[in-house]
Image 1 (cartoon, rainbow, N blue to C red):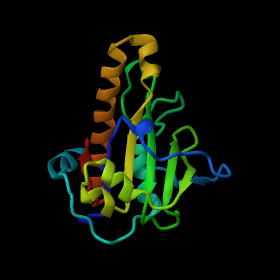
Image 2: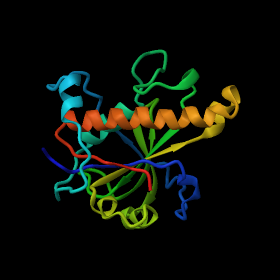
Image 3: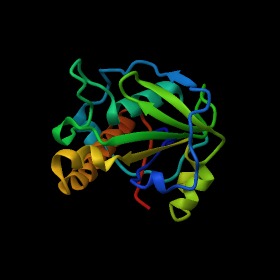
Image 4: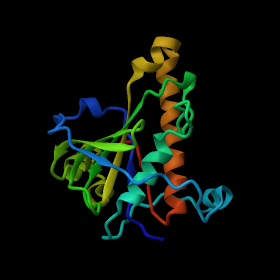
Length: 195
């Protein structure tokens, strides 16, 4: 198993001390998602484990593409996504903190599901600062990429009121499990960090 991925999940990205803004509207198109793999869902469930030690290998854009798609990618013409969402309101936002990804500069990127692309937000390696925000967990600093899942609560609250926040938390779990299973099928290691 290649152990080269970390999944960091958070709902407090907006409280971060990092200021993010679009830098020259730089976009990176991702390779199309693969819709058939070699490992069955049942095998992926059996093999899925949290991994906190990562190799020094880089990730490639095909792996990144597949992981992002599995969390929030569009899966049909109606706009439905890979992970379920209460009322199909999709409050989740994915941010990629890139450190060692072939063909992608270190920095922070926002995943745009509708076009399956990354929008560059900030340059530089933010993994050390993110690890500090995650109560010093070194696996966050060492991972080639960190996936941050944030939620825009008002998307769900508009329809569901106070329950919308609870639904958004459930959706983070759905997306995280998809990432775990997709990572397993690709021979990658991942861990969910809530700190």
